[in-house]
Image (cartoon, rainbow, N blue to C red; front, side, top):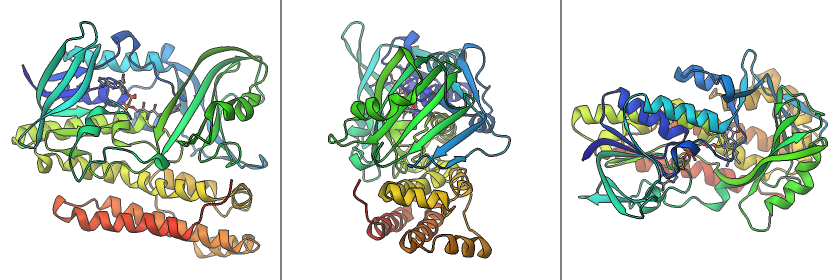
Length: 451
Ligand SMILES: Cc1cc2nc3c(=O)[nH]c(=O)nc-3n(C[C@H](O)[C@H](O)[C@H](O)COP(=O)(O)OP(=O)(O)OC[C@H]3O[C@@H](n4cnc5c(N)ncnc54)[C@H](O)[C@@H]3O)c2cc1C
């Protein structure tokens, strides 16, 4: 049977893509390597923002899915003396039960009547005339090889996507550079109380304690916490050792480990192109993760919806070549990719600042909590003249840092503008050149410090 759309992976991105495609009347097949009852069981910080649900019109977490309501996010500088509340007024977030949430998304997809096959491990794309026309897979129950054909394949199989790795396209990166990956380890712990506000999430920045990443303390209740760390994907930084030494002491009287595990997160701009002829990429497979905090649940759901809507339009027009699907690139870049690309530059800058600079910059408001919030929510950050003078006076004893932050701010705005104007395919190379130039400039001018 030839489907309109095959969605690979029933995670947050895939479930939303499949549900949306089926609701739009496309013959949809959802393939998942896990058993159905384990869909959603993923090592995660379990934090989601309300605004993602509101923007996408998705019912909020409820019942057993909802473990905690979060009122603010606190960012701590390396010396722990600064604690900035990063939450916008009126916004809130949730700590979810990841498995229950994943099961809900899967059920909502299945309720559309689409075809679902679990325990199917997709191995590689099938190509014909330079376009993807289906996937080759292995049935995990029988060991049998199977082929599935479709007009369009939506790949939502996560960071290790075998489909992305098999693409031969100037627009799709097969491998993600190690410097753009964060390796994480986290435990869910039953604890004997809490020294931190149980209705805030707590993020600790420090190059010494979490090189390249951060430590997190996300309360699930007054006596249960999701505790974790992300560090550079470099064997010299042993993530479990960092966890034992730097993170575990944050837990008050740890009583029991409820769940433990590791994972990787791509923390960079989205793929150059999210489409090729006959195929679209969604979620971690497409590097659609917030580069600053590694959150990808909301963005993968958003991308899943956009991809399916573009697929429906393309099929209606009878053109699912790269040009027929290109619209998804533009829409995603405009709505989310622009702020993620800007945050990627900020991530690179922050990774290059020393703990002393982070302490000074955060304490003196050179990089304010409002700046970070604004960048994260896609706004353009342009401090007024008085604000700039104030920052200049406060930063006078660290002139290099002051200049660097001013430079970073200008680059972020340029990057955002470039992505907001994501090009037609004919102008792609010129646009790509301009983006690469911004990255090179940032890396040339802000030198990494010794950790
Ligand atoms: C330690 C850690 C903490 C995180 N914390 C947060 C957080 O607090 N908040 C947040 O928003 N994000 C967080 N993230 C990121 C977030 O989990 C991901 O960005 C998000 O789940 C991406 O969704 P996805 O649908 O792209 O991929 P996934 O959710 O990974 O789903 C991929 C699906 O594809 C299936 N699959 C994989 N390969 C195949 C194959 N070959 N054939 C068939 N099926 C396949 C998998 O079984 C899975 O069901 C965290 C990630 C990690 C690793």
